[in-house]
Amino acid sequence: MIIYEDILRAFQENKVKYVLVGGLAVNLQGAFRSTADLDLLVEMSDANLAKIVKILKRKKYFVKQPIDPMKISDATTRKDWIENKNMKAFCFFKENGQQVDLIIDSPVKFVEANKEADIQNVDGLRLPVVSIRHLIKMKEKTGREKDKLDVYELKRIKKLKGV
Image 1: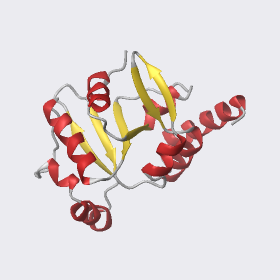
Image 2: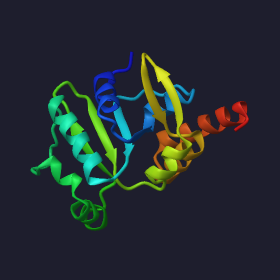
Image 3: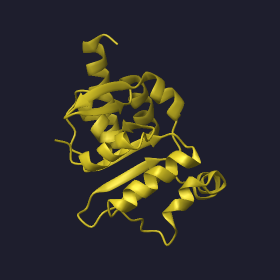
Image 4: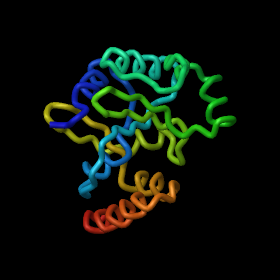
């Protein structure tokens, strides 16, 4: 059972284009890492983002910024946020502490990640998980200590798997 199963099922039913990244992807690639949020690299089309926002709002997620979350589904607004506000992720929260982060600026683009995604079946869900290679590339870019540890573990797993 996955903590964000309800969202992932809704994504599957609505044909949302995404790839799991972050701590959950680290776990699904074989390393143990405690994580509380759901990090997603998504296709940045306005239509796909609109579907995501509608699903998250329906599931009672909200944004803390005083803006309409649907604005993320506008390419011009996203570009402004990335270039002028240095935004890397757009975050949704729920009263119970759950958090969903849409990665909007990444060293790995959705098209690349999706092409090499490892499709894993968990509890009847078809989960596209970022490849170990791309996950390492994304984590190396952050410079955070926990990501350095993830990179170390992922490189060990990569070697063991021979990929």
